Image 1 (cartoon, rainbow over the protein chains, first blue to last red):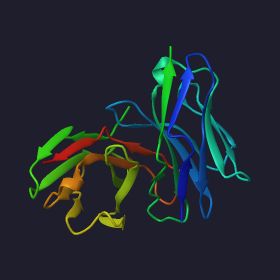
Image 2 (spheres, rainbow over the protein chains, first blue to last red):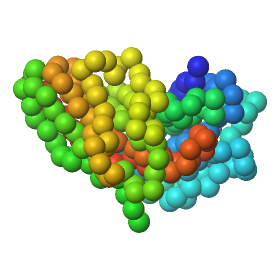
Image 3 (cartoon, rainbow over the protein chains, first blue to last red):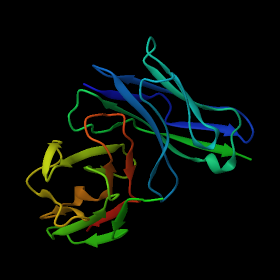
Length: 115
Length: 116
């Protein structure tokens, strides 16, 4: 069965400092992994996705994530946080063997950015 | 850029009433989904729909729930007799291609349902 664990429910950083949001996954086959962002009272927006091509994936707004199969991790990083990055971030897995390709969400990490 | 739309943005209803949440997926997409997010909890899969039938449903999606694609553009979620615990944000999503988990699911802005 697929599952996603986001290791931190809240992360607080100062503006201009690096961001690290941690995610570990469990999947029985070849997973596709995604990071979605949800700003307050908004829908879910795709930041980036891993689909078995390059292990280092670049997304929008300067975010990137590295797929590490040996560690079953897909951590999200950004070199320098901006105030507008404050939001909830969801690590998501979808499995090729799942015929409906449904998304399994982690519990989310709320990113706070201090001025 | 095409996007998934949902109406209404907010819905308040009395317990036991029927509600219909509406979604217009992106026009050339083939897979459609409903997810929900109870306040403070994770986003949960409800149902997937392909080729005019349900392809998978979760345990949450009991007999009180139904989905329909009544025409070529709309995709609806009906809750027959709402309960207090149905209060949540409901997201519609759609996906372009079949046969792969790699395709991005595009989400609508959500409908916030409050059952009193």
